[in-house]
Image (tube, rainbow, N blue to C red; front, top):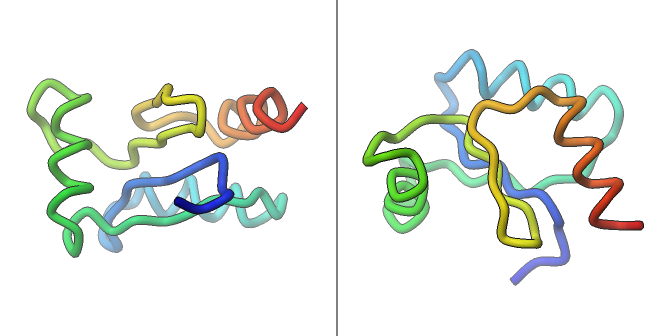
Length: 84
């Protein structure tokens, strides 16, 4: 298990994923990135929390909560909460 508080489940072709990653990188927000097309267990988890659909980006936080297609500002706020 990593020390990251934010894990982004994404694909390299998803424009929503690219946008979220770009916005988080701009503010140097730390995260772990998991490609659901290369990791079948990750894909299964994403489907399990999205009514059987592989919706990306899905973000998992270290407290066990998750968000589907969140805004970068929401991810930053949650990270601040987790690291406070």
